[in-house]
Image (cartoon, rainbow, N blue to C red; front, side):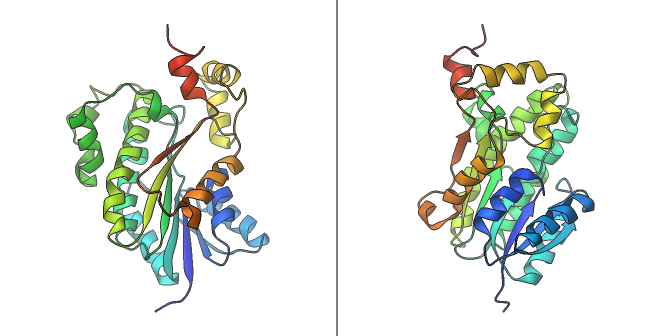
Length: 277
């Protein structure tokens, strides 16, 4: 059996890299992205910082592509860390694409990596504060998003085009589903001695955030920052600090949880100056 431990980073952007730096000392780090150039750049950056790395592509809306990534990683060693930070935002894609990538893709990743994660392994899925601003779903809807087999998810009536017409609504549903899915998958991952949690960041300064801040909803996002308790955006390193707790020994009693890291935007949305009138 191979003796190498492997970290798999899906989505080779700022948050994925920041988390990998905190939790991957001694591991081989596989950086996977839809674009090979992004993966190559991230792998070179981490290699220059002393990590053993490799780069590959993955399309998380395609199960075959995810399975190929799993095969690549398991051939290198035991997968002990999974960091899922890939996705598209409301300003980047229409509703159907957001649901295919952010909702279906995450469900498939949890299924496939849950089949191979090593004993003692851990994972974090990057969701979003947006999932917390979605209105309450019914218990039946929660259960469907949490437990419907991944390949049947997009056929759910609540996810059909006539029900999800706005990219932001699609994004909020996908991110709520991510947290629900992780809660359910934590039970299955425990059978392999592994843990999985969700982090729901607020506005973190990354290229994706810059797209949002300069996009059609930019004024609203800037107002969120100005009227939140923290009064600013977050950084990838602040998300990585939470991930390091969840993925390390100090987080050994934490699994199936969702951790809101948004500078208080959600608090202000419900109970402060950002509350809808």
